[in-house]
Length: 425
Image 1: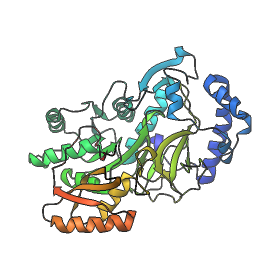
Image 2: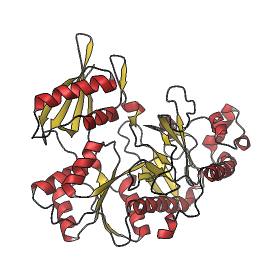
Image 3: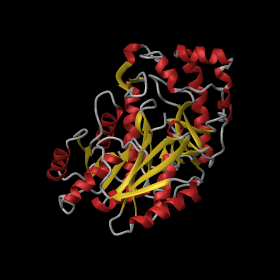
Image 4: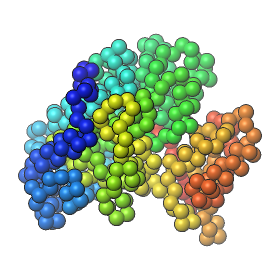
């Protein structure tokens, strides 16, 4: 299985563009012919699919949004006969109509390959025992990780979410070497294992965490408590699920699979294509997906394409770790703030822990921002508060109140942590 990610004969940057251009020229006419949704969309825009031949030509194509996918519920974006669909996954639907994603057998195989590449990129081999804590069922995460583990030939331990007592028991009895989950649950497990004095008994070597934004402070805390190396994995249900990008042991960006996916960065306000290195919204075109191919899908995730080659030697290109989502942006006193910026400021503030809450309120017509953050016990909380206020003003350009509370005070989550509480009416 290691042959799957060999890099010696992989293409460099010029060859990558050539490869993606070739796949794009094959993709567009096929999607136009097989997808009634995209045929209508391109006809409405007056775009001839055969005229899209290069990366720059993509700007002439309309975007696809989550609203399109919800309007097409349940199978309005299907691009193959229904008898070719072998599996359905779905988004949670917590913010509206759920998105139904159909997969062909080839889609399932391609996804398993990308997941296996991710695992191999972090150093997982067939000798590892991989504990999979994300949810199964309609959600993509548990099933996707299991497929990747099995494709790689490692041992899958599909515990699913929750039941911390059982998770630790299985980790000890089966000598788990790799932990997979959300970073929030990784932190919860790390603190619980440390509290019980079990750190020396576990056999964990690495953790692979995703599904939410997590900063360097949280990464350092998990790594210290469990004595492991952690990796950030990226994905979204609409594309395949987790596994479309991951960081390697160099930790200088997330490698993505350019033979399956074409990444663009756009200005989220104007929709204009941005140059590599510029920060903006990630837009994804699926190059090999059959069941529900997507053209220029707006992810709402803020990142940038990294121009330099990774020191690890992999030719797979990289994006920066996701800063936040355009729909997570907070506007207060005329300043746009992403939660990822608070992560960055915490990293610069000595004594501040990884866990925080952003609380926005409005009093007498004026907005106010309060940051509740945990402090390390050996530090003076008053000094942490003053330094954090100063760093927020210098780095983000806004005055915020800061309340430092003891480490472990904020609630931990088995899923994703809610960090922003907007109490404005």
